[in-house]
Image (cartoon, rainbow, N blue to C red; front, side, top):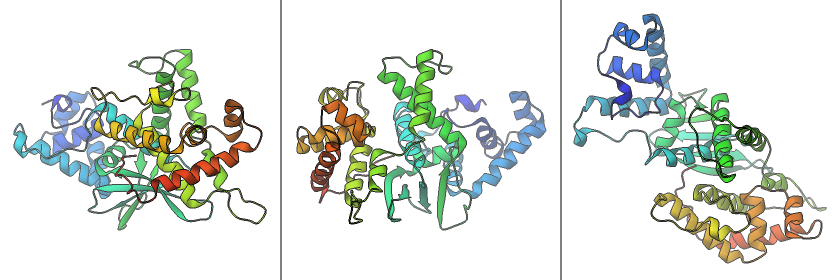
Length: 344
């Protein structure tokens, strides 16, 4: 049996995990797997032992348990439980990019409580208080763990803490480069980035994740009395809009016309994208002209205040005042609204 073509095994599962399931669930011998992979049996044996050791990680253990049950269920669809995947590959990439982007922020960590269906990404703000930046579906978190994009150094604790790995940062750069490539009008290609423009997009993505967002920088600034320029609730409102904006997957002309970029296409877009677009449109309409430009550029497009002032033709240092007013309006817009169960 070829695990790569088995419906119960997702295509993204690393080969060592596939071999582990083939050996532990299907009962295939180490030597048979080695002949199929054209490697020495000791290589397969080390991979199987390594996968078994990784089951101390709660996310990996839950994912492998689900996959094992699905594999044991065979071709009977009724007995096959849900596996750790999402609706489609495009949706998975979008959610993965959102989560990895959050984990790339300074001090970010993903917390997973046992027996919970979701995880949260948190980080400390300028005042040392913990701020939640994302809610992650448990199945998406399992994918990240299985693919070695996140790592838990102490898996035995009641609340497991996960950090992004070098491999996760590399994947983050690849996904951001692809998004940048799409925004420039290039189509996706198999086999990596092959043009000069694609290489430039990859380098640009590497720079983006290495710096703070404008809101994170402004949150540390204080006035003459020592009061923070942005309150915690203002930062949370801006981050919430950004979360919806990324999930909404806007078109490349969003800076020129956000309404056209977020035009609803119910025939091709997943429900989660449509819901996020509706929330962004509602927030922007509530802000109105001028204020919507400030939050779009600073919170969503991650432009600095100086860049925003130049693009909008505002006088120097006026952008900070406009952004402050916009974030207060945005805070009022979200007041009383329940935080949606967003993914990433």
